[in-house]
Image (cartoon, rainbow, N blue to C red; front, side):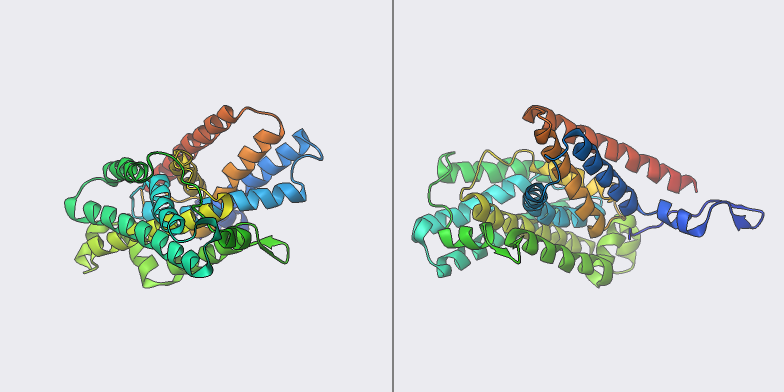
Length: 344
């Protein structure tokens, strides 16, 4: 459920003009996002019969969406505070490079489980530290999150390129990591999908049922009132951006597991894809409203859209155009909903 519910339609003759279940359904951002997702699936299934929505396609869509889902969970918290993080792709790269460089100097592709564990800790630590630093600048320096994270995007990528000479180093991932998390399955379900589902469930519960989640939603709704209530807004923002960095670090581990390389030049549009998914899922760019469930559905819309366009033979460049258009439409709809709630 979203943090705020829209008001019911005016009553006619003392009774609602529409059935209660219809009115409740109309206020669920997740429901409408799911309808869009189903419509896309039906469209591509009809446009490419027998080629789309096969078992292979479903598995690939889920695996491809797993990393973006993990990043989307963190972005949901950030956007709920009325913030934004444009640096997530670069932070993922920096965390992957840090972990990859350690792995290269401690066995490379043949490194053992001890090294794999340390690499994971390094990636998580680098991501968390970078995110918390950006959160501290936002909170104490009163610098807009857009500017802070835009600077963070360039700085993180620049450090990664300095460390590697701008080239993806060989041996950045252990075969143990790739054969388990990257390619392994349990009961036919890839470990990547299971990990993303676990992360989603945990932080969905955190947002919906803990004080941390309540404070995050409250900051996005009315930061002035939150300060008057004695809630440390600055500290909360550092935690939220630190969480985003932590999940970017986890995304780096998942990327190394899947592809075995840091892909320094391959994450320039991660922020576009993740922000699109979160906004599509009903999280308001104006803050104070959103849900992890909506993000889950929102993540799969660009994933299905990209896969479907590939299946019907659309060039890759048009795929990026489509995702960008979807983002603009989602933000426009969010603005209309906000204005409607303000007039109600």
